[in-house]
Length: 134
Image (cartoon, rainbow, N blue to C red; front, side):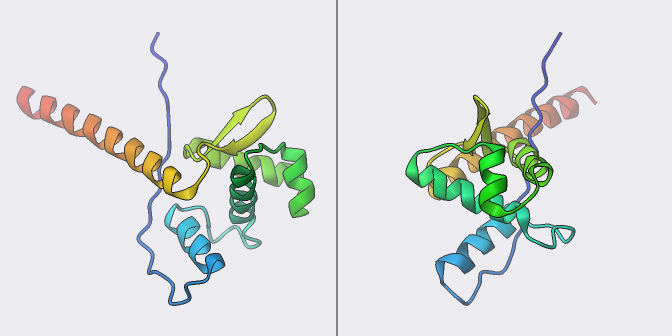
C-alpha cells in the first residue's frame, strides 16, 4: 500500500505594500502564502503564523494552549489554523508542540520553493509520460 503525502501549497501574487514597515511586509508575505482568507475576519491564521515566527526566532515551540492564551483565541480556532499551516508545509507538530518548519522566513520561502519545484517536476514527468503514451 502506498502512502500519499498531501501538501497544499498556495502562492498568490499580491501587490507589494508601499509601506515598508516590518508589520506591513509580514502581512504581505502571509497574504502571498495564502494565509489570510476573507472568512478569517480576525486574521487569526496570520496571528498564529506571527506568533510561531516569533517563537522560531527564539528557538522554541508552542502548544495549542499556549497559542490560544497568547492570542486570546479559542483552542479550536488555533488548532484549525495550525492544521491548515501543517497541510501547507509551513508548520510542523512534534511532541505536542508546534513550530515553523525552519527558523527564519528566508529559509521558509526557500523550503516552499523547493516543495513547489519538486511538485512541478513530478507533474511535468507524468505529463511527459502521458504524452509519450498517447
